[in-house]
Length: 295
Image 1 (tube, helix red, strand yellow):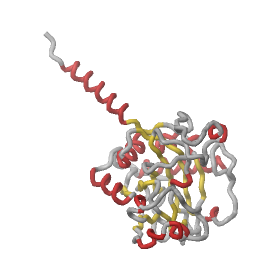
Image 2: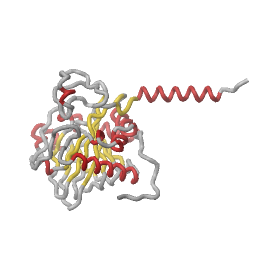
Image 3: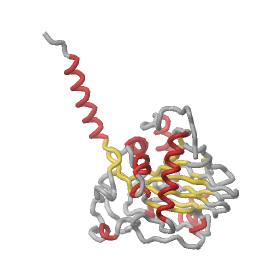
């Protein structure tokens, strides 16, 4: 259990111009101390509770079970915890994460595809270099993921690594995550000469990366867990590419390639810039009216 008597104001909801520039140039940005210690503790506790409820099932509401292959020893993976926990939902689908991600990506309206916890067990296998977008039911260069450290992510326990600028050098193909750490480079040889950037993070820090940015993680060389909570977001208006991913089968059965992905409850809106502007204008007008001198 975590205890803090004093902690800063809550998470940020808007990136700085420098952070936006870094994200768009490199395809990723790391935000130190994105959550306060108390927020990190709350999210970690809610994540642990939801994972316990899922048991060996990897997907809330789905039929994907934990196995014992190489991939299952890369990390413990549990998806759509927001469907089980109002606390996880408040964070990962909330307006702060949504607005921060949308402004980095330059997207007016953003939806959540899924959240997931990725937890490297003690002595876990490394995570091979990969792109996220090839796993998803949409193909867009504006998708963005967040990765929140629930424990300190270090060189020793499997922190993330990114290939800066790789999001501009690839298409929507990608190999799976398996024992071949470098399979991505057979598909995209031009990436093999990019110097990787390590991203160790204190608990509560977060990274944001483009769905086409190449990234991976080292093995966990410690007897302790390295836990993270993540979410994948995509621009409203993106269309179905024919790959169902973790979409509910009943919904996927209604889709044809080219259909707009707009299921309100399965793919909820997490940011709507037009709505924010309209609300701000309404409040401004109401304030101005209240300040008008009266005869």
